[in-house]
Length: 440
Image (cartoon, rainbow, N blue to C red):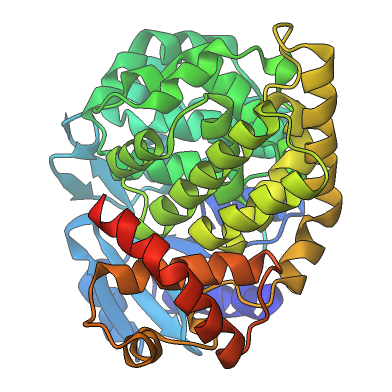
């Protein structure tokens, strides 16, 4: 796919050239091409004005005309084509107040953030590298184009991009660039939280999330976001205490792990994720995982072992769902002793041994326990609320849900068979107890 995309991108460049315009591949696609990495998309810069680009290609979308960008669509793949431009003063430490179309590739490249992103390729594959991007990449160096402080003051988001690029590509940040970042980091308060969240997600989902955490801590970047966030406290955790976060399969799970390391409750995690503009689905998954962790932590602290560990696991399943438990099991397999507090000096040896036994059971047997559960939700239970109402001859009420929950728990724990007659018989025996609880 990447070869086809490159061929199509070069075809766009050549068509522009044939009509008398300068045109080049620019930015991240050139950087990744030079590094031998997979190119995700190709961007093109040209001396042609947006209306001239639109006139030359059959399918175009005016995605960013105010910034000189037209998207050319070839075989349903989008290619951004942007007119060479010079940018005026920036507003809000984020975007230029105005742009001026120009005919100079050099001036266009001069406005970019880092030297490795300020290179271009012509139609024949010739490299244009006026700021030494290739030399910097060969020396594993990340350096701003021109004066670093100017670049960061123009667009404060570039500071988070700096941290992301350094961690993703294994680069050291040039001294002047790092000093400028530290001097300007307070400007992150002007950046929308959704942009900060996007950069954080990419760092955690990148090639070296541990290095990203080190850089975030060293810069105190998360302490300067527009809204205060709990994740800023991560810089108080020594970098050497982090496990290899790449062992956690996704950015979302790595994020949950970070919150659990901070010892936050589910509600606090949800609020922090809201502030960071994470989706409702991500908030829900993190909240349920944290809720299950709290229950299992209490069980481990109470000396759960053997059958008790299984019961704690199944009860957490009924309340928080199988996906939360499987997610939690992966985190426990990586760093369960620390997450459950089993390394605390205050824990007596006997309690620690019981907690470790429970942890081992959850890691080794947890998935099998989930598979063996006869009913893990009310949908899987062989009786309904209407069945109970008819069988017991009572009006529907809160007791119905309470009784169904009791039946589900007894079934999931293996104390009742998941068949209708058995459950209705048990319902008769539990009915009085549930009514007393309802009216208590």
